[in-house]
Length: 276
Ligand code: GUN
Image (cartoon, rainbow, N blue to C red; front, side):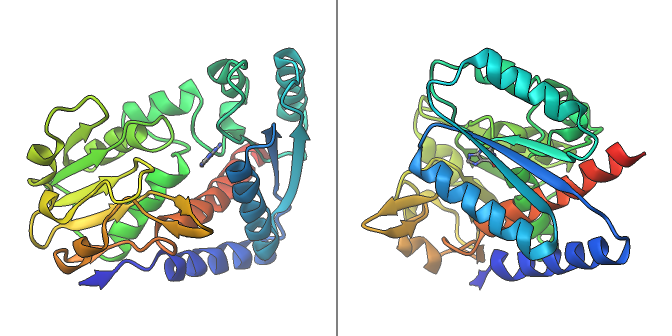
């Protein structure tokens, strides 16, 4: 069994970005909008801030109270869209439920949409002509390629259909000519699908949901789950799965750091697009 070391690979990517910024004298700025006090969001934003500092991307967080009016958030995004110093805009999700997430996300200029979540960027991925690719799916593909794991023609089963991970992964992996199956909370007999997976990707957010008997021997397992319990972080995959796989991403140290590295990459990409 080989550990897919996202932490190590992300370090390499960060060094490349840092070098590029220094060598080409770039001045990228990422602005993150966080609404309300979701504790997980606060942790994620801190980690994004730290990584930006490490590589030389300027970082600004706009923290708004959960009662903030939708109109104000939209106007704020419009100002950032028009500010030439701003390279990328990220609205941390989830937003409080009274806000229209789609409307807010789609206010972001597609060329500043570092998350690749605007309709324009989703559509370009769907059409196999991607511009900005969502960070976690992009990080998963990067890691598979880094370890030279074949994708073309393989059965890839995704568990979880979120807008941030599961759904964009379908398009991204189809574009790589994989055979893609997606399972979710209404799928009958998930095991019937997962057992055929050459590559299984779990993005559910539930500890131990993926068990050893759901996995084909020597499969590749990508664990996107981040589940906190008593101050410790667990993935979606049960520990016994490790004995059965050929490759697996650990939690922590697998996909998490890859997501952040791809955010930095996307910020530089947006900077370059907007500089033109
Ligand atoms: N919440 C959890 N992960 C993410 C992410 O990658 N982007 C945004 N915008 N919100 C998130």
